Every structure is written in structure tokens, then in C-alpha cells.
Image (spheres, rainbow, N blue to C red):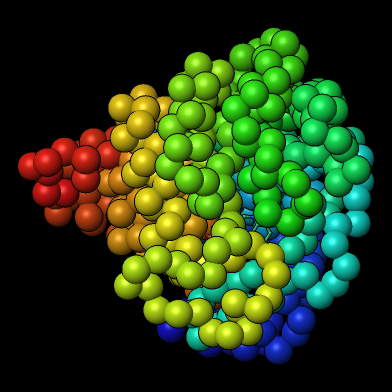
Length: 367
Ligand SMILES: Cc1cc2nc3c(=O)[nH]c(=O)nc-3n(C[C@H](O)[C@H](O)[C@H](O)COP(=O)(O)O)c2cc1C
């Protein structure tokens, strides 16, 4: 049992989830400005291995394990987060203007199933404030992703201009960008995943993306196969890749999945953590298959171990991200996944994580 699981988690879980999260971000923001502490964290969580290095969408990653969007929505804790051994971090979601999000409580834990349900609703201080924070930071040693969305009062026809506004504020400070069209907590928002609407958004960003920085699209795990297949062609044409997946509105997690506790079923919002794992991997597998492996995928949803990460990589993810796993297992999860991945690759005689991407699609493949 890690230090976090023994001491910090009981303390954090005695608090309301959002209060605990805010305290964690405050602590990380403070720790980040103290260089010796950052160095200490780097030493404790650092694990490098040549097999873990990879290049995706033209960016070099020291390892494929990233932090998912929503943890540091306002870019307040970047230096500390970069010290925890992630291969990349994703910030946001940022909207053009600041917004408070949905009324509290809006974040709920279900420890018996290692799950969370959230209906935060894009609470953030806005892209302008985040850009100011990012402009004060030194260039980081890992790629920084910036995830963008739109304010709750934006009509669908105004969405391309609103994404463009958010993008133009932060485009200088991110190494890659994610168009979030899959958050389940803003009314009607996921309809931006419809092909024509998404095409207009991507076209608007392209016009502003003079440095041709990679732009990914974050998808919902609740899309039907036909919806996915109609999107993949567009995405292969107009995006650098996809993030699979955001949280789910589903509560019946498919055949064989144990039922969720009644209170989790009754709680409105997006489900994340262990119960989301299979559904998000299924989406990864479909996107990989539909794109013939030519659309880079960042896999996210229920990763709590190296085996979970490896399964998503085998299904087609080139990179993976964690969020809920960190809440339940703490930051030691990051080196644990990296060490485990290096071991799994060596065990299958693979010299690079790239060789494992999508290998479950090959009929004879064992790894
Ligand atoms: C409290 C919370 C807030 C989140 N906020 C965002 C967000 O602002 N933007 C986004 O794209 N995803 C957001 N997510 C989704 C995560 O980035 C991730 O895709 C999802 O939780 C699945 O991964 P996990 O099971 O490892 O948590 C949020 C998730 C949680 C739990």
C-alpha cells in the first residue's frame, strides 16, 4: 500500500470530493514554485526507459502515460504536475469566458467500484486567465496539451467561432490541442460531435492554426458504431488524432459487467474510473479498426494499472491518460504503470511501445 493509500486517501476521502480536489491543486500549485521540492518529486516518481519513448503527431513523448483533462482545469499546477513523471499533461477544459459550472455538489465518489461521477459543467476561469498563467512558465520537458470547449450559453451555430476564440487565446502555449465535444454535463453539447458541426469547428481552428500544431478531438464512449464510422473519415482528414474517451452517461456497462451501486445509477453526470474501462477500450478498438490504424489515439478511461494501459495500447492507443485512477491510487500509479509497461513490453520481446499499438487487431498476435 502506498503512502497515499495509507495516509492521504483516508484524509482526502473524509472531505467532500470537490474540496479535496481543490486542496490538492492548491498544494500542487504551491509545491511547484519550490524548486527543491520539485526535484525531490522528480527523483521519487522518475522512471525512464528507452522502450517507453514514443513520437505521436510529430511530438516526442518520454513515456506514453499522461494526465487527463479536468484535473488542472485552470493551468495552476503545471510545474509540479510535470515533476510527477507523466509523459505529457493535458490542461483545461478552457472556455473563452470564465464560468462557474453547475451547482454543487457535482462530484461524487463510489469507492466500492473505484468510480467517480461528475457534472462539473466546465467550471473554469477562462482561456485568457489560463493563457496569462501559461505565459509565465518555462518551456516544459514534456508536451503540454490544452483542451478547449465553449461556454454554456453558446448556440451550436456559434460554436466554431467560440472554439476559435478559445484556441486563439492559448494556441501559443500548448504543444497540442484537444477539441472537447464530448462533455456530457453541458446541455446539448455532445451534439457538436455531429459530423457537419464538427467539420465547421475544425475548419475554423485550421484557419488560425498557422504553426500547424496537432489538434485532437475528444470523443464520447456513448457514440453508436454508425456515428463513429461517419466521424472517422472526417477526423482522418481534419484532425491529428482523437482522445478516446470522455466520461459516460451509461450506467449499464454492458454484458458481463457487474451492476453499479444504486446511488451511482441515480447520480446524474459522467461516469469515470473502473466501470468505464471496457467501454472506452471498445471505442479505441473501433476507431483503430475504422481508421486502419492511421488515426493516432490517446486512450483514457479506467486505467488503474500497467495491464489496463497495455490493453488500451494493444487495442490501438498510442498514448494513454489517467485521472480517476490517481484519485484512488495516488501519484505512485504513474511510475507503477511505466515500470509495468516496460516489463510487459520486454516480456513480449518488443523494444518499443509503438510496436504494441493495435497489436490485438492482428489475428495471430500474442502480445
Ligand atoms: C472530476 C472530473 C472532471 C473532468 N473534467 C474534464 C474536462 O474538463 N475536460 C475533459 O475533456 N475531460 C474531463 N474529464 C474526463 C477525463 O479527462 C477522462 O477522460 C475521464 O475521466 C476518463 O478517464 P478516467 O477513468 O481515468 O478518469 C473529467 C473527469 C473527471 C473525473
